[in-house]
Picture 1 (cartoon, rainbow, N blue to C red):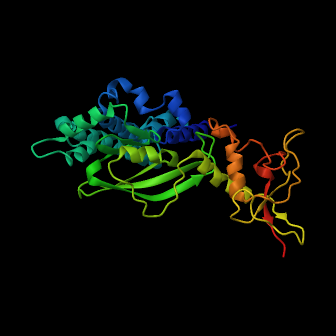
Picture 2: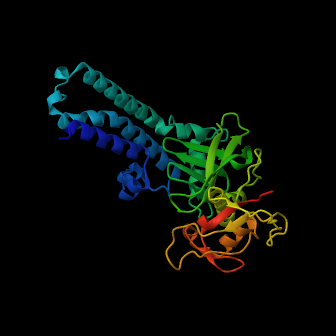
Picture 3: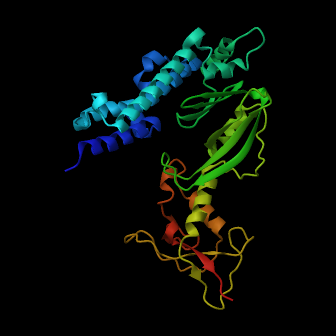
Length: 364
């Protein structure tokens, strides 16, 4: 029989991780600080800065309460430990309670310090005050940001825990505990890295994530990184007043077809290799006439009758042209179906899928 304390510990650990690193399921169910305290936080569309000042403060308090919440739960899950009577509990539990209370008291004291004098000690307010004009305050900067955030032409991307927002004047990154702000005219944006994922959990399609460093010429403004999908890169460029530098020479795939082509190539490289018969010479690809044909269609998948078909064509296409042909035959409005779909051979019209595209190995 399972021990109640072990079951509670496991369940609380999962809950705590999901509450801190909120997955989409928790967000949809409303288990977020923003949703549960939406009335106190106010509308983000109306008062963007004030909303995030309250949100970050409340998030800090709730996350710091999690260790103490575990102790309170264990009082009921393991009554034999006598945790309700602190002096009767074991030395280890007493130390844990003391540490949990210290963390909670520290967070409360920090939140109280932030809220004094109209929140001017809050990290967000301090970040805004850097951009304030002489004889002005962070309130003027907050008013400017609030006004621009209400406009419908702003650029917004990313998950709620790492949102990127670009208005006419400001580049911002919203995180769980902070808000990074930089002026367009003061910052330089540089592409530093990119990662290609064959399958995105949200889109069920390939995605390239581009990392851009935002560095300000103002030494008091800390640089920060923003991440966005490559298909949003052009929209970001249109919103900025200066070009984005590509110091790392990162190849950015601006369209879904370009992203799919990279995924197509990675899948084909893992397929079975086709060995050409001795004496057979490979001719130039009939699609581009630039490189030698290097793929052959062979029915290898486990599709049922009427699905994939055997292709008897000799190698006539290169990998890039075959990938472009495959992408051109897809429903452009449903990229999540591309990887699992079938298309006809460009020469004989026999249906094939990605698993049937085999790299060619030429024999001397």
